[in-house]
Length: 517
Image (cartoon, rainbow, N blue to C red; front, side, top):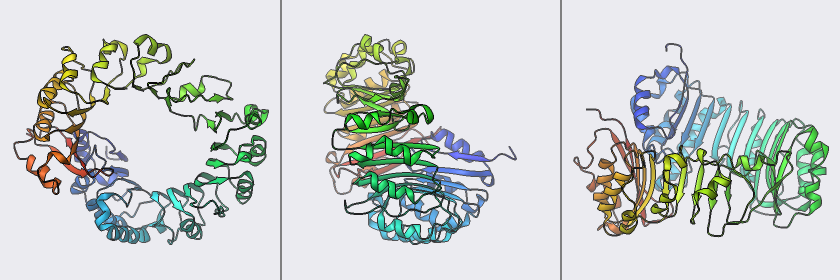
């Protein structure tokens, strides 16, 4: 449409759709853009800017960059000042990533220089680290979100932020002797998480007394016993529009602390309900746990009049080896993790299986307990198998076809790997997302997966470097596998990354589009 304004979010997009969109859009009509070089969309940013010149994005107001690879990152920040309409920037890239380690100084300098040019006209910034911002002017900045920041950087930053109205911040105090600093007096909205310091009520009282315009407050704190006093919080927050919190302690909460949140102020005037156990108290539903491990004996109580509210917030449940009896029903579970034999009748007594989309099992043959799968879990489309799939396991599965499964996560190790892959291709004919950990020679396995799963749009292989002859040049090892005849497709991207947590493993990511020819 000639007058359309495009808001493009390319996170986890299939390459077919990405190709379709970026071949049809008019860049001057894009007002919001999210680019991601995550593992399921490798080199996406490079592809996008190979199609468009950045100065063509004349109306672009909001940019989000997620884990952008270093080559694209440098190019983007060299040209960011050409986006004259830019007012909001989200930059979710960690400078300590292995990819940047050899050039981290150059990248940091480039980002800092680019920010110096662009920040004066930005209204909104979201970053992982605040180190780039501490010495920069903020003439128009009104909304700032930092996922980590030091006290020293924050002090400098606040000196140049006279227009700041909304702040979301994770503050690392480092030392228990550090004091909370004064925040900008004009703040209206604040989300504050403090790490590595136990906070007292007196500290919070003094802190909030310097924020007279604050209307919306969210806190995540480790506190001393007095921090949990609901009566004192009532006095501090009576004029707030919203107040959400999560307070933790290393000591058992006393009963009086819980009762202080059961007054008419909390339950009738504000309708601010809490959940709690012996070590934690939190706002419902804002901080309600969305995951529950039934082997951990974690039971939360609630002040809400609707006793099912906590259960309705849980979307993932894990059944482990030490399962305990629990009287309750969870109607919103979409991810089910099973680590012990559990009957279908037991599951239906605690879960609405019609909502399950992702099932995680210990062994592949455990799936036989829940047949026919399309009747037991009609929305299920993602399956994860924790234990390795070996020849004995695969032979226990009769000739089923699990056509509803389109995402599969497996571990293959040992002999007969090629036979196992052939059986998996038969069992799961509609896979479009594949995560496969291999501790065997990868060439034939990758070849059969890529060419055997005919609907594959994304594949990620987690490989042990010990399978290669030349363990010091793993990138060349992978390149030598991928010849012109390796992939029977003509529209794909592949990328190799070393594991960030283990030098003995590397990852190969594939992103497939439709055939061009």
